[in-house]
Length: 206
Image (cartoon, rainbow, N blue to C red; front, side, top):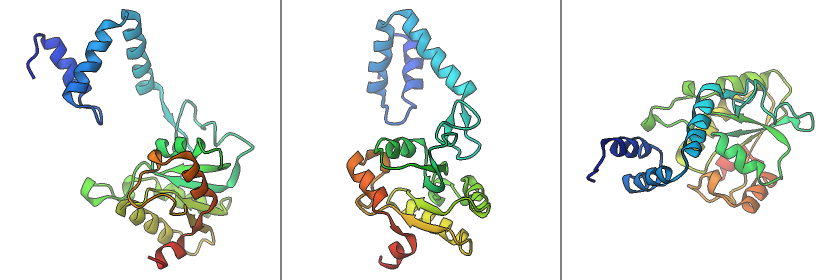
């Protein structure tokens, strides 16, 4: 792709580093930004810089938050004895959109994936185990995607919690094998949460 401006080329190269953004899409976005009022570009830039410099992670669930404790964890109406284990904030948002879940969350920050260099030590599994051993959690819902990496992570967590007495369940397979939670429709995802099954039974039947 030939550029008439080095500034344009640099902007396109930076934009194309975002997930799912190729060079042509990046060019379209950059040209769109150029057509907007300067104030709008400044607002976008300021919002991104403020996000990068000021965002926090909830000390209890590791979700992205504006404060030390996120709005979900600080809500007294949520059931603290029920914790849904997810990969990242996109899954929290997907489950919240169903309106079917009133417990808390634990965000792992990824899945065990040797190919991508992600091991258990790179996730927040140790803090999850510590949380369970404190005794307040009565049930964990393992809500990772139905992929090999998701199933591996689920099983690893299950083994780490053996002997704790906590009930461990997984979302029902209304979510197709290989699907990511964020792409599931709200009705299917909501039913998968409500119709969750014991985790041990889920892998014994495979």
